[in-house]
Image (cartoon, rainbow over all chains, first blue to last red; front, side):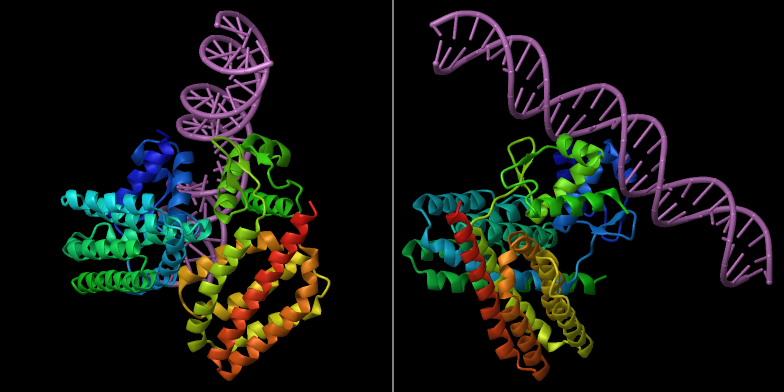
Length: 214
Length: 214
DNA sequence: CTAATTTAAAATGTATACATTTTTTGTCAA
DNA sequence: TTGACAAAAAATGTATACATTTTAAATTAG
């Protein structure tokens, strides 16, 4: 596999696990040395993580591991609310049984692996959402949603506590799917809105608790 | 100045002027040779233009200059409609006189330079919009809007005919500003919606005429 | 001691060289 | 001629080396 891809995944995971805690400044040299690759590879990866929001510029040298803020979490939630229901509505019209089936399978898969790591669970959850939006056939919209998910997953990834929410989330996913099967786009949209809102509120709560404890 | 930045601007402009027409496949080597820089620089620039939508992947080697489609233009318009009114609404609450002034100045500047190249005019127009949205204080939203504008500008940049629309556009900008001064957020939002819709329709018309002629 | 300036160290930008992958070309058998 | 396969060419990935910029340290004037 490409070293670039490997390093991308590894560094991202290390950031998520706070091996490089928020605020850390990572230079090309440092990373190249630490991960045993050339600076060229590091440059590419830094750039990718920058546009994914997993690193942020730090003056004219180095990149910084971003922190977490309630404000940012709320903004991400707001954007999800603005775009995901739209995608769902557009997708509902041309959703195929094949896709509904895919989504169903995914739910089963998630339910069957209750012991997954939080970030893996988050990834599967997003794949579920993603499949529902897929058939909106709007490449740019889908790209924006993927970007947003990247951001959100940075917040969500290492939240062990979020597991408490897993059951509620799974139930809502199932209901969402059921509504779509019935063709009740209206209700599905409303459910999606409250689903995203809940997730956002939970995240904010966790952040506040965590920041209060610090 | 950094060679990376120079090449970024130059290549973008060349794509806009169709020096590299849509469909052209550009390899690292080719570009490095043509512009007299090393492949490293080209790699960075290609990556940047990729994420801005000015190049698209082409198999496993080379990147392709994207074409234009009515569908894509409509999608971009849809996304603008979904996000820009939101930004305006959020911004309206904490907009400062300083910013209103800046916007006013920009309008004057645009009016004073009727002879500007289309892409320069487009850039100034966007700056006007951008200032209005600025004080929404939502970094991610603003970033999405900038990305969207990048895409739209690829369509708009070389459209000489779009100049016919300039007067209407300027008038609407002025009215928008006036409504904001009065604090009539409601009306301003409605005007913005129709403003974006008009721009989208014009773009679609131009594309259809152009593609019909081909 | 402070602050400004110079000097050294470190970091990034860029070019070149080599390794690996991908694409193309050319050959041969059916 | 066509299609599969092998060899050559081209393109990208990666490492190293050098140049330029940026940051940090040291020095000196006040």
